[in-house]
Image 1 (cartoon, rainbow, N blue to C red):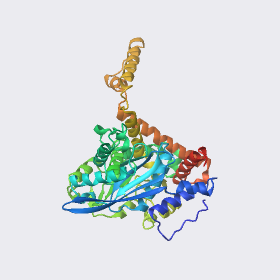
Image 2: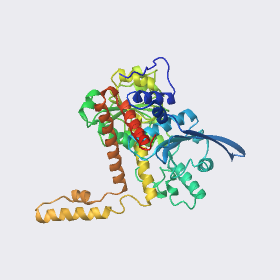
Image 3: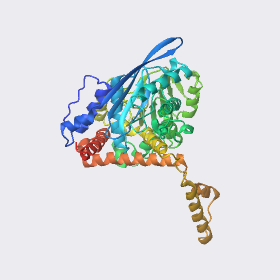
Image 4: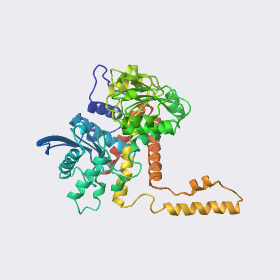
Length: 476
């Protein structure tokens, strides 16, 4: 067991939770306290306040951009639009980005940003003007720059906001040939990449698939077999939760039995049709009218429903001291950032619940953002140079086998085998490889240092070690 004392009577804030988890892993490392402190602290946080004239009045907005670590540049991290955005939150999220990019071996430092705004309070034209002015304030401080700081979508933002940002940045830097790389998560026709929208949810799916490839890990969680038939409770049907639930149910045969949304809870023991539920929500129809399950009023205690896998995919701190003792699952995978507080983490570990941590589980977004950034700075679409060449080689092989080997292949097999990899195929393959590699690095750390005990501590350990090696190599 770690010698770090775990308080059990007081809930910690998000930033304090991240620091406590970091310190727990660092306590097992042979690093100087000064180096550990250098890795842990946030390098800088910038606060910008700007005015925009809307509806006949000047409205002042406050935004943040935290830069946690510049040991590698550019730094990477999303921008969220929410009234809950504050300095502590963006600094904690920036720290997680540093550890996350190190864990999945991306050439980025960690950053995060946010604007204190409820995007639903403004129409599209007003939101565009606010976003463009925010971009200007960031760009003039090099807090959005293809070589220094590359934002991406987060809660409350998406392709639309990234399109406005990249367009504004190009206006301000019209001689920068790499201007498209100033943000990721853009629409494909503006330099984005196929598969980015679904990337974080897809990464959750790949993370679970990799977990289920290891019998020892399944045994620790009290699970058997594969994902087929496993009962899932998911909180949040936003971009991440929707794609994770959709892929796991449609492609892996899992049953999503409970969906916890802000407007209500949907339950169906036979499995909820995620696509039908999402379309129902997008059509802005009352949740109570949904026919694919039993709908009850909003209730976060639904997280305590019995299941095989619990996927918190909403906000941080949703599993905490108030409900950790009542969670009835064998396995939690953190699709959101920081959904399990440090205090709840201790309770759950003591109860034998296995947690696949956020810094690994939701790394799919930043991984595919990396692919997009590479695409932008190389100025060429993935697959463009080799796809037809691969098709030609595959066709030549099949034709030779049929002619000389007296083999006959079905038309469907030939069509699927011959077709060369397009951008989406390469993105998914690269993401799958990244998630597999990172999970096995975490497992190796646990095998080498059993005292780490759990996946989260091992993930932090792996990330801290990577960053420490970087600093040592440059003489720090």
